[in-house]
Length: 113
Image (cartoon, rainbow, N blue to C red; front, side):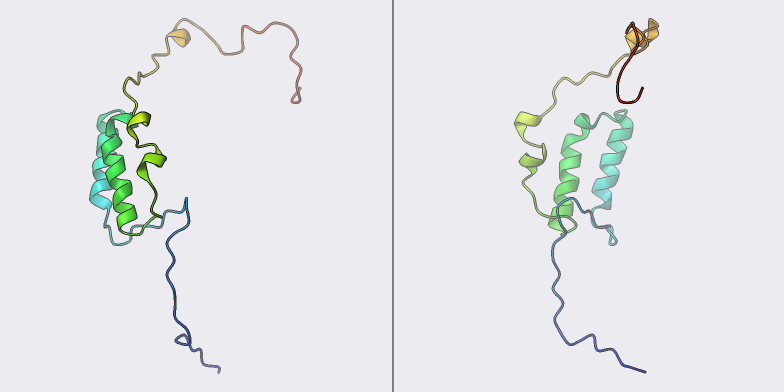
């Protein structure tokens, strides 16, 4: 039986690639994640109202090397990107009987037909 030698070289830990989110096995950022998710639930999934909690959570992940360090302003957290007056769509057209595409008359042509 051949023996395996794992100590022959040093192992280098690289930070995660952009867009890859390793699991938080040690729950280092779990409290921040839970606050963010609670906020989303309370605010009926309107993420703009939980913006600061989202920012804190992502910063925690970067600080604990669970994601690559990025400039949060470039990730949509700059003051210029702040959403101030988001409104929930009230579906008023649908309540009046509107059906998308129904107003088009004539034969439809396209790559599907």
